[in-house]
Image (cartoon, rainbow, N blue to C red; front, side, top):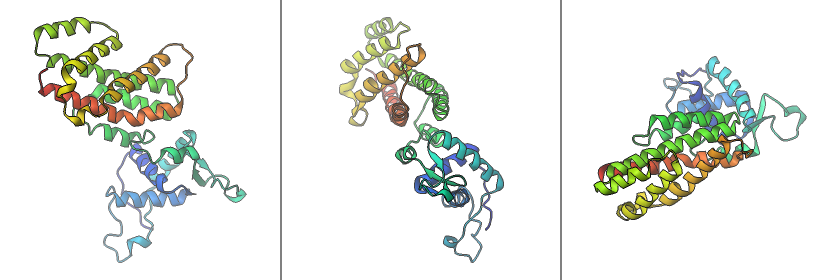
Length: 282
C-alpha cells in the first residue's frame, strides 16, 4: 500500500469519517482507514499516490499517514459517546463483539444521511458560511451550539442556538428600521421596539412585515417565510428561555437535532430578507 499525502485538520478528518460511515455501516477500523484515504483522493483533498503508476486504482488501497489513523481512533470514541457507532459488528457473534470491529447504530443510521449534518461541525459551518453576509456573532454562537450538542450538553446547546437565532432576528429588525422611508413610521417603530424584550421587538417587526413588506416580496423570499420567522423562531426562543431558567424542562436530543438541521435554511431566509430590505425602501 502507498501512503496518501494529507494536510487537513482534525475536524476535516471527522467530516471525511462521517461521510464514509454514511456508506460503510460496519467493518474493521483498518478498512475504515483505507476507505477514508480513498475518499480523500476521490474528493481531491489528497493527490492520487498511484497517479504515475501502472497499478489500476480500483484495485489498490491507499494508506493514511499515522497521524490520521491516530485521529480516527479518537474520533471513533467520540462517535461512540455520541451514539453514532458501537463497538462490534452488532450481529451477536462473539468473535466480532468489540473493537476493532464497529457498526453504525440505529440512531446513527437515522441521522448520518441528513444534511447539513450537526455531527459534522466543519461541514455544517462551511454550509452556513456560504450564506452571503452571515454575521460573525451568529457563527460564534452556532459553533458553540454544535460543540455542546456533540457532547450531549443539550441545555447549553439550545441556549447558544437561541442566541444565534436572536442575533439574526435583531439584525433583521435593524434592516427593517433602516428601510422605513416614512419618518413618522420610523419614529413609531423606534418607540415600539425600544425594549429589552426580543419578543416585543419581533411582534412589532411582524406588524411591519404584514402591512408594508410581504406584498412586495418576490415569491422565493415569501415562500415558507412565516414558518421560519414565526414558528421556528418562537420554538427556539421558548426552548432557550426554558433552558436559561431553572424550569426543569429538558429538551429532547432529537428535537434539538431537528432544529440544528433546519437552522441554516432559517438563517438563509433571514439573511435574504435583510439583503432585500437593504435594497428596497418600505
